[in-house]
Image 1 (cartoon, one colour):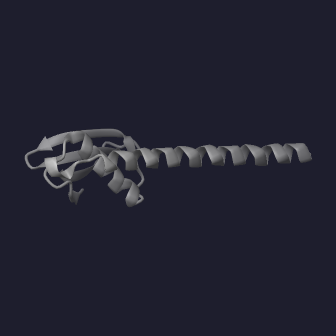
Image 2 (cartoon, helix red, strand yellow):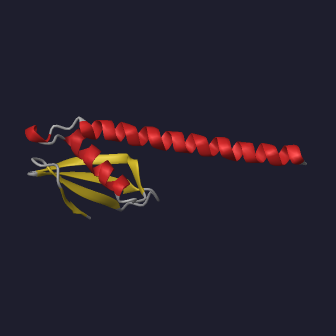
Image 3 (cartoon, one colour):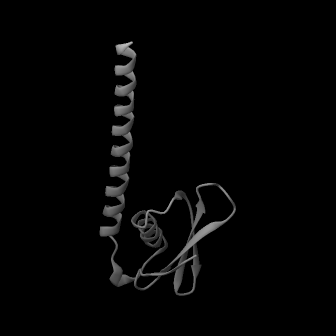
Length: 106
């Protein structure tokens, strides 16, 4: 009986460590991408995607960041995310092409 309890707790601990490690790796990778953005030469579509993903993480939004599309819309990039519940609705974050500022979220 004790061995089963110990095994369950150990399994939970290992799972927790894996989840925390993956989360930290993702965040450090994002921070590395953010640090490489040169705002002086304007923002390209990949940089806009990185900025938008950072906005989602910083605002603790429950959005699936693996399904992303970027649309060129004159002076902004429209970064579109499909919601994690797989509905047809999407979240759009507009990123200014010159400054990298978030212009609006809808």
